[in-house]
Structures are given as structure tokens and as C-alpha cells.
Amino acid sequence: MADLSVKIGALSLKNPVMTASGTFGYGLEFQDFIPLDGLGGIIVKGTTLHPREGNDYPRMAETASGMLNCVGLQNKGVDYFCEHIYPLIKDIDTNMIVNVSGSSPENYAECAARIDALEQIPAIELNISCPNVRDGGMAFGVTCAGAESVVRAVRERYHKTLIVKLSPNVTDIAEIARACEASGADSVSLINTLMGMAIDVEHRRPLLSIGTGGLSGPCIKPVALRMVWQVARAVKIPVVGLGGIANATDAIEFFMAGASAIEIGTANFIDPAVTIKVRDGISQWLDAHGCQSIHEIIGCL
Amino acid sequence: MKKCILDLRVRALERISEKHVLIRLTGEEPLPEMLPGQFVEVRVDGSPTTFLRRPISINFVDRQQNELWLMVAMVGDGTRRLGSLKEGDLLNCVLPLGNSFSMPSSPDEKVLLVGGGVGVAPLLYLGAMLHQKGVKPTFLLGGRSAKDLLELELFEQYGRVCVTTEDGTMGEKGFVVHHSVLGETFDRICTCGPTPMMKAVARYANERQIACEASLENLMACGLGACLCCVEKTTEGNLCVCKEGPVFNIKRLLWQI
Image (cartoon, rainbow over all chains, first blue to last red; front, side, top):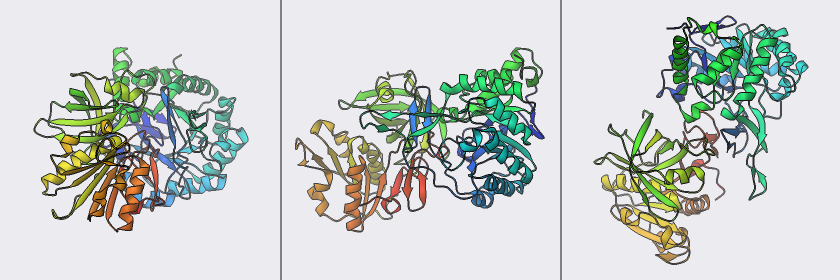
């Protein structure tokens, strides 16, 4: 059987399949369907320094081969996470990674520092790309200066593996990725959702409470793949690919485009066991093609 | 309760009104434990515009026949596709999801179950379980017209059935909250149906200090409490209808009633 293990900076993954933040809860929501320790990593719900109620309902609109959401980072804050959620998930035998969001370099850094203290969280994914909150989020991810300010501030206070999640809602994503690399990121993950919109024509108003939302699902895969390919050629740090991955073939495309690991997001809603199927499908593909290791196909284009 | 993903086979599909079908599903293994008020996330195959699963409440569980009944209102492409399933087709289901209606502490409690439209669906299974526990519930079921009232003969197996129609073609004319049976006293009310109807029922219950639970149907994506799309504002902040609900005590909801 082919070797599926990969490294993201100092972080070792038993296989390259992780779950995308905001689509997999804290992992526990899916434990009836799959062995959580069969995953390479679980990236839990976006966490902020202070609690956030998120946006008003409705927060979701179905689209052709995808969905829009404007959840808006609803979470109970980092202290609640450390006290109440961390004890429940710390012993899951996989990389439990926290997605960190904020509204200023300082509160990103403070939130990251509190998670740095949690022994069994080996990495964070810094979300500088949430399209659904006004006070921050994507604002930092759409300019090199904004990305640098957050990544630098966090890097000073966070000492483990730092993955930065990039927004696709930019002109040149490779340039942002290079800025993150130069500011101390160990890895970049991409893409977050694409900003979109849907309208209720009978009532002549947007379907989502804040008007716009983030598009995810198979419909965004070609865009994500193209961006992963561009970024993988622009930086030396490992790239984590996500965006519309729903099966092993999709995942293999991302590896070939240059991703060292992948995240599965919206597909979890359609098939709660999809992650393990993708893992097994990657393994079978490698075996069928005589590959000893996943590394033989990463960036093989 | 452990959730599972099952391919269930369509044993029968019956058109029970112009817009509603009753799908009777069965599995090779005994079906898992399910409670009244819980729901199933059904994958819709063969409908290009339907991406997400559709949450469908559990209408009835027939243990002897090993059947799960789903009542589907055909409102869009996805649910119309479900309505065109054929006997023998497989339907991929994630179940059981969500919480359930509370059961009375004593068989002497007077329980009123109020449903409207496709919202009557979970009340059949709830009524059957109440009946099994020795409670004889009163069903108050509403529709626009006689042809919109669903499964009336089945409800009659488990309790007294009161009916309202907006056009007066069956039962008392008007909305459920105008029915004369509400002049009686009740200890507990469970309701499922259009939000304005449930709010009117909640107002009635509130005024009389009657324990009342309502089953909500906010738009959902995951059905598992992971995506936080289906939230309802409550006294404890935004809660997922799919996980913390769909059944809520009305005192937890921030309804202006």
C-alpha cells in the first residue's frame, strides 16, 4: 500500500485528507459516521477572541452544484473553546487544528497565543479570508499589506505550525501567498469561499440575510484548482488545497496541481462519510498506478 | 442515539394529495431507533438543481413491517424528484437526526397535537407513541380545504381528530386556533406546521400556561449541527434547528407572541 503520509511544515499527517473549517463542526458531529482518527487532520470551526453570534438567518442558499453561506463566524470565543471544547477533542488521534479569525492583527494574535498554550493543538489555520464579516476577515486577505500585518503579528505569538487560509476574491492570489510566506507562514491553504449572491425574485430581495455569501461546493473546484496550481509554483512552503473536493479524483487533481494535503468541506454535507472514502480512493489510485508514495504525484504536472 | 447512513428501499409510494406523497421505506436490517419529532436527511439523486440533502420529518415507523414513512410535500425540483421515485428504488438517508418531542410524565395528561399542511407529518408518529403509552391525544389538524387534510383515517387510530379548513369544506371553518376544542383544557401542546400557525398556537398556550413545543423547519445544509446555517434565535443565542431542535419549547424561542 502506498505511503500517504505528508508534512506541512513541522506537522506530520498520517494521510493528506483533512476537513475544512466550518463544515465539520468539532469533528464529534461526524464520529458516528467515520473513525475520526482515520483522517490526516480536522480543522475545527472558526474561533475568535471574543464570542460571536454570527449573522441573522437566512444564512444559506442552495445553488447549482454548490451553496452560498453567510454564517459569519458564529462561535463562543477562544476561552470557551479552551475550557469546554478542547477537553472533548484533545485525545482524538489526529491533528486537531483550530481555524483562527479576528478583526485586528492584535486580536488575531491574542487568540492564536491562547491556542498556542494547548498542548494537543499542533497547528492553527489563520482565516484571513472570511467573506461574511464586515469587521475584518477577508479585509486582511485581499491585500499583501493586510495579510502581512496579521501573519507577522500572529507569528510573533504563535510557535507551532501556522497555516494561512487565503481568499480567492483577489486579483493575484500568488502575490498574497508570497506575502504570507515572507511574513512567516509555514503553509498556505486555499481557497476559502468565493463571494456570491442569490436573489428571491418573488420578493425582490437577496436570499441571504446580509445580501452576499461565500460560494462552496463542486462548482468552485476548477477555480480552486487553478489557484492552487498558481500558488504552488509561486511559494516554497507547502500548499493545502481545498474547494469543491468531493471524491478521490478531485483530490488527486489537487495533488497534481501542487497541493501537499487537501481539505474536504461542503461534500461532508452530502455524504458525512466522504472523507474516509476519499482517503481510501487516493490510496487505491496510487496502488493502481504503481506509486509507492503520495509524493510521487504532488506537483507532478 | 447513533446516527447512520442507510440505503433504504422504496416499498411503496402513494400520492396522498395533489402535492403530497407518502414514501414507505424499508431496510434489510431492522431500522434504527427513531423518536417522534426526529428527521431524516434524504439525498436526492438525478436532480441537477438539487445539491443538498432534503430534511424530511419522520411520519411513522412501523416496526412490524420494518418501515419508515416519509411524507413529502412536492414544492421544488428536489421534492418532485422524490415524488417520482418508484417501488424498489433506493433512497440514501442519514438518520435519525435532531431531538424529539417530550413525552408526558403521566398517561392522564391531556395532550393536544396541532398540525397544519405537511406539518402534520411528525404528529402521526408522535400520536402513535403517545397512544402506546396510554395517552389518548387530541389531534387538531388544519388545511386550506378538505383535499389538503392528510392521513386523517390514520390519526383516528390514535386519538380524537378535530379539523379546520379555511374554506369550510371539512370540519370547522377557519384556522386551527379558532376551533371550539380549544375551549377545553389541555396539559401539553405539540405543534408543527406553518410558522404563523405555530405562533398562534404558542400564543394560545402561553396565555393559558400550557407546556408547548413547536417543531421548526429552518433551511438546513448539513443536518448535523456542523455548518450553523439553520439557526434560530433563542434565549441561549443562535441554536441549530437541526441539532438542538427541530423541537423547541416555546419558552426558549424569541417569538413575539
